[in-house]
Figure 1 (cartoon, rainbow, N blue to C red):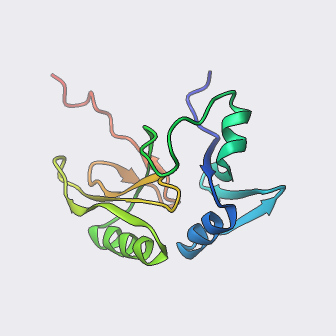
Figure 2: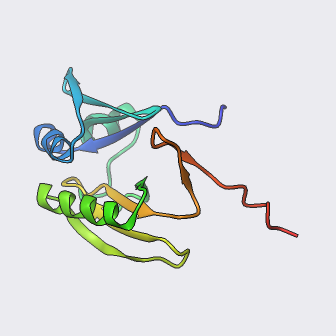
Length: 147
């Protein structure tokens, strides 16, 4: 298996509401066959019925919608001010702020919101992670300082 992710699919309970939420944040997607597709850098973010996604995955959906599902999506930004602006935009679009933006243990600044279906998004400025001009993340060499 290659070390990459092509698609992240979020199971949603109300597709028009979910699409409107992401569009309010500035995302632009295409809707086809009761599915919304967003190009997100080098991968795609897809919104699809939670029930259909569970069935398609051969899984039972045991957790109530809106509960923590063990996954947090993240977007790294270039400054603390960008974090504050995006957190505010998410709140205005209908997100719930689950962790207000604040200083982090690693010297950065981050907060977390949940979309209307309870998917968690960490919005962060991490000065240790480089963002390329196109917004793609470049991890540092964590072993460079190991003696």
